[in-house]
Length: 300
Image (cartoon, rainbow, N blue to C red; front, side, top):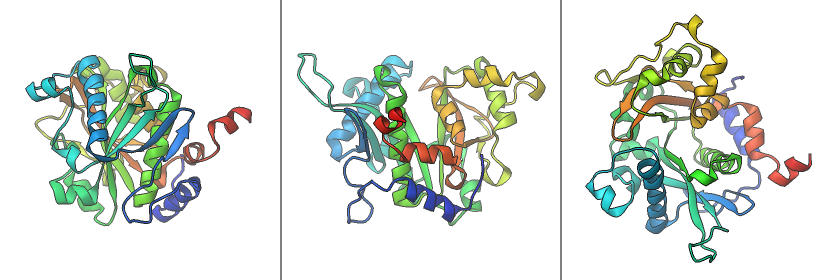
């Protein structure tokens, strides 16, 4: 890992996406952000596509993941809250998906919810502020642009390299377009028992904690200590293997983690807070996610 200043970080990201096309209208991204075979990543257009992302989230979180739906979610079969109305929704679409009758019917198979700090400021804050105290972080960096990543989900049969790569390409394109300085948000371990993840949580606490100026603490009434095991008692290799793929992916691009885990009983998860400074993004991943196409890499 190596660090560069924020302006240089933006220049690297800008150079990594020379083929992306943007609308002339300020604030909007135009069309597909990237394609791999039949898969495409872009921002959702309108309420209909946002509802498709919400249905995907319901299927992943509630039907498969053990989250507990309220009455409204049960009836609508959608995971929805007040943040959906003003967030951007990044979606991966499989254009070769088939209906149960065998006809081609494009389907949303992956999603991320994106909330910029300028929008959050007008709409009552970030989603993750219900679990973590973000005010000290925002106060220390008043001139920076933050992007909250949330509601990450991928349909089970699509949880492979291609879909994850497309989501990252989409996120970094969005970061470039909106000149984001840092990405934040909650990432989850499965299950509401932190002790089941003692080694992994301890590893993050000892080896990947955010420095003081970037640290965020869980709210006092929700705070669960992460350093359950002493540093010398943690087998780093086993702890890394025990990390969920999303958290492992964040680590690889240079993420740091906040102080304290939080148990989310509604979603049956143990959450940690993630901070990724754009200037600290590993150059290898910037090159990979913004460089050659899949076919060109395979031929190399």
